[in-house]
Image 1 (cartoon, rainbow, N blue to C red):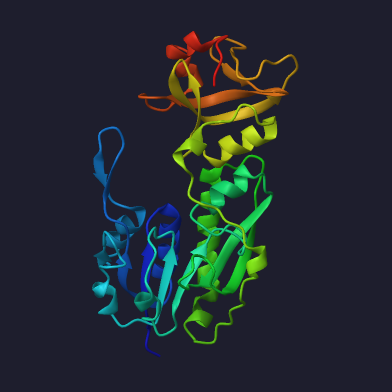
Image 2: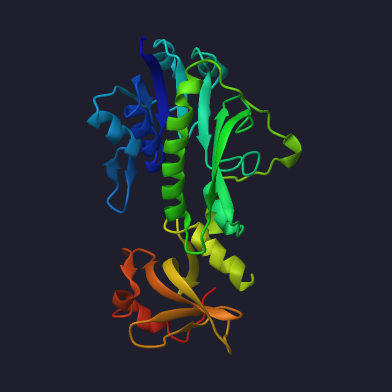
Length: 310
């Protein structure tokens, strides 16, 4: 039997795990579509996406349109049976959706119809959810509204942050695609329409949402920090600069003063909340690299003791 032809679209590490699942499958990957290289970090080094890096390792052609809505002929020029997407980062037009023999499918990091949008993984944690999952859906023009072919449930542990949950989601997406790829390529896949009345939304994190609301209760603050760790990082204003809290543990505590920094010992720093305190394990002061708190307390951190954050 002739091998089936697939085009893959994705950008970050979670998508690279899905691409690896396709590479390990008995298909021909004719093209990988990913976001353009971008400058990152303080030195603005030009960086390729995790998907591009993996594709080049396996000598798969790569296409990086700035605007895929207007620059997509390279995709239409390649006959294919299926387009698979995961966290690509741009909305595709109807001509791409209509191009493959068996349509376009997307792996979305929520149990649809919950959390449609660009930040389902982060917002599930920020909202204190105990479960999430991966949905394999058929793509339609409306964002994340297509019928669902299959889903897999993922438990969200109290110790999870967005980084660890992204890892779980990537593994789950890869396994789900491996399981369902044969039926997707058989043309016999069955899709179930989503219930629009149950739809909720997870928009991309706005920059102003990164600041911690110290008026919220302790659990909401903890979940907020977890949901934004390790990227982009939740912060408070400390000494007129942003202090991102990357890794921490929460400890119940009496006689706290919410927003005050305290130091149980010379190598520790806590941010007191309403009914407890966050013991900071690693952090990043604005304009500085991330560091363990013991290193931070050897320098600038000492000046924060007994001061108030906002």
